[in-house]
Image 1 (cartoon, rainbow, N blue to C red):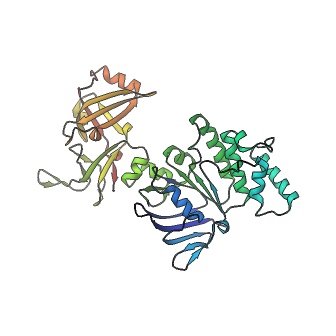
Image 2: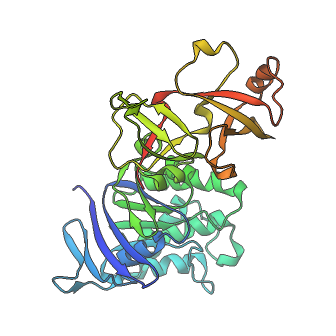
Image 3: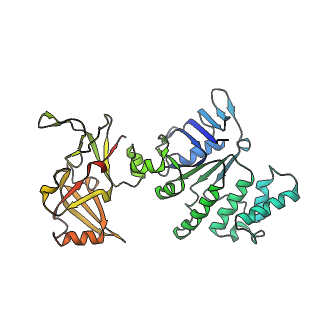
Length: 375
């Protein structure tokens, strides 16, 4: 049977308005957003911990919440497994008892329950830790124990609320690999909440971006990263360069057709070779898609910007060069452009030009690398 979660809810907190709408099928759907955007609150509404003001929540055709019909199933009837950031293991119980607590609602026979728990302990590499309490476990062991307990309840929906946020960086990669293996074996729908674009990209199949309480349409993960439609999605995908923008259909008073955009903050007209949406508000360009021009300018005439070097930063593997357009309407660092390139490329450029702060520099942006965005 095809699993499907449908969510269309609103909740007014006076200073914050949550408006979330998405549909998630089998597999892992990510909810990506900055802190305080409403990601965790969405999960609480789905789990039944918080009641929305209006809307509808369904899983596999079963209505969990419907404001018009007066339906609001309690959390224990929603078949939800929610993994909190701190894993929420019972601190006074051993690992075995924690897992037994998860199994209590689906298996009353204690002998059978112990056998199932033993099997789950082996599956999650927890054998030998039966008598340990959560404080005696590593971060990875705690996470595996919490997931094992959740899966013992046979949830139809698994929700993970920033499961790696409390872990040190060196632990995250190992635990992420373990989690991906576990999720592959889960037959239901999974919601994975994170503010990390890298986690979302590696773990999820599809993604919904949240910004200030409002969700965007669900899209395949690669589509969201390669072709973000909104400024919020573009920023969360890691793009560093933005400018306010509008369609620029005239040059010297003459119509030149669609496909041109005026970058307000950079003071330049750019050809993107495709239709510019009427509601465009911004453009974005990724740092590694802004190219240095070191040769004859006649070979690179389109989308060329005359800039000045403002700062040079050496990163671990790359060079970061901050530049500002000479036609920029503001000298604010917010209007600067960030270029990233291998160190070898920057050294090769310096053999032709001095490459010092204050120097003039020419850069080029290819039409296909311009991201057309709305607010």
